[in-house]
Length: 221
Ligand code: PRT
Ligand code: MG
Image (cartoon, rainbow, N blue to C red):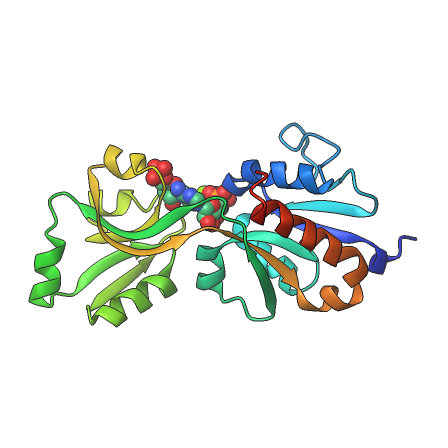
């Protein structure tokens, strides 16, 4: 039987973060030994002895790491803020998967006027916690409608006045006649580490974390 205290598990999501994480894994020596895109496997060994990668949804990464099912992983700051990152050690901003959290509205909706008039604004978002605290800090009254994807559609069909969503190139907003009306915060991907694993598997884990840190700070990406 494998001694689990001598194995390291890394949680990775197949989405956007994946492509930008591969070069880091390669430099660390933790490159997956199989092609993820072709395989349907959810657990894959890496080139480093006793290390494996588990493939999960981006939003599930903090959960796997928090409970120790994965020793470390990579998660977007958006996910970490929205879900709360209690119990997770966050040593590093990787500076990858960069985007911004914004408020966007249909070109026909006068957001400034609605705010000035103190109107109650309908907000559709996958990020109710971030949205609520943003508007509360501004003293703007809102009704939040929780969605799980395709936020850009909501203002177009009258489900909401505005959306709170991530923007990177701006192409999606533009294609749907939406404009950014407020910047909330910059977002990037962070390394998250299970606190217990840091102690119990420190001899294996710490050199890997150090190596990632050197790669990121050394600009070798
Ligand atoms: O897709 P899935 O439901 O599996 O999960 P997910 O959406 O959480 O995963 P994924 O892979 O789409 O996103 C993972 C992480 O990438 C997020 O948590 C962010 O931290 C980060 N990221 C960086 C982004 C973007 N850029 C981004 N542009 N996540 C989403 N988007 C979306 C945005 O929501 C909008 O719909 O892309 C669209 C806008 O892109 P532009 O380029 O048209 O502006
Ligand atoms: Mg997505």
